[in-house]
Image 1 (cartoon, rainbow, N blue to C red):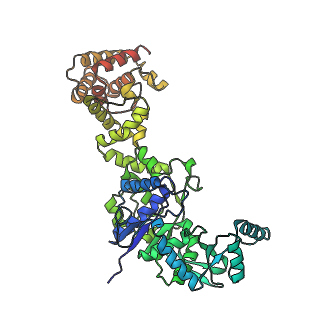
Image 2 (image 1 turned 180 degrees about the vertical axis):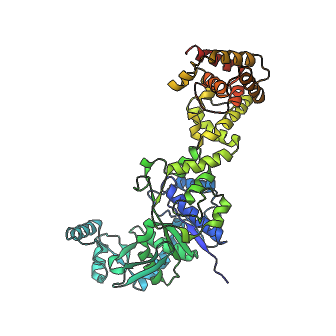
Image 3 (image 1 turned 60 degrees about the vertical axis):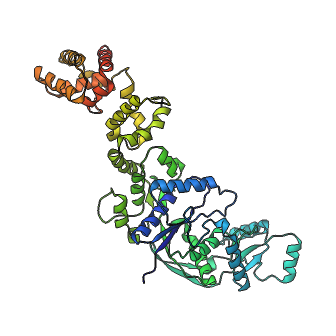
Length: 486
């Protein structure tokens, strides 16, 4: 019988949910769904000073917004809980005692000052700073003396010498480390809290995790973790280390490259489908040239053998291109809801809208969906529907309005529009076509000047929809305003 694939996403709740974490979660989720496996959400909160429940809630909300649901873990439960590390301290203590009893670990009484001095001396000699092992074989008298001084020991793992640590990585193929380059490392701090490298091994083993898919920055932790698996007699999972995410300048992704948290993208009005589609392509390449994938298509296409070793570049232009596709497909009601806070902040609308105002705004947004990549961008395009003080956008627009045929076109349109009731797109289209026929002019000599007279711009939303949305009186007033400026 085939072993069930079990993967986990185990974030530390120490701040807003980072886009890199979202990519790791997505890859684990895609693999679980592809292989009919399970995704476990575990919270690694042993950094007591920085971990907060607020951050934990942010992580969970962001995952759910992205459509990444977990099968076991926080909020869901399961037979291998608890799923928060600070609730597993008794389990860690039990295994720590086993390592101490079997000689795989020992108490270290070195102070921070002593360790700093040791590291500095090694670096001064050009050596790799590693713990010297001075507490490896303390006499009982030395231990008693340190305890009498009030020193609180850490627990260090006794790294075996002259061993090659070799493992097959799902992304990087065969990887090897020398144990002599690791040095005895702390597994439990002096306050009794286990460090990451120790707790993660026990959690993964006891939760039956079969595949550990995580960021490349954890690659250097893997030899320590493998040594712990071996010392505890636990079965190794398969490891896969996915590449770092870099900014377009090929430096590590940071705030100077723009938004870095999932919540920021959500607040800007990106759609979860767009962000997921984009994140999937950060370090994974599909078989063909296609870039737009539904959730179902991503699950079907995803495989670890197409995950690249090379760093993935976070290209905001590509994200905007992909998200624009989903914006166009979305309902105007949804995009309006996402745009409302940005329109309020920009001063276009107030806090409360009447039913009529909201219905009008949905129609306006429908006209602008093809011009935006995310909802916050609506403020860059919507001014044409609100601002009646029309000015030429450039000299080219002004020159078009100086054509000798323009006055008669303007008068014809104004008189026909003034008599029109009700003002609807089909009726506006009929007026424009009628003027073109009556004056024997090409469409460009009618449509373009009318658009400029109403908006000051040469391009924009469909003219026949624009006029009804602006309204008859405002349209006529705008035309008079701009004509006066020629």
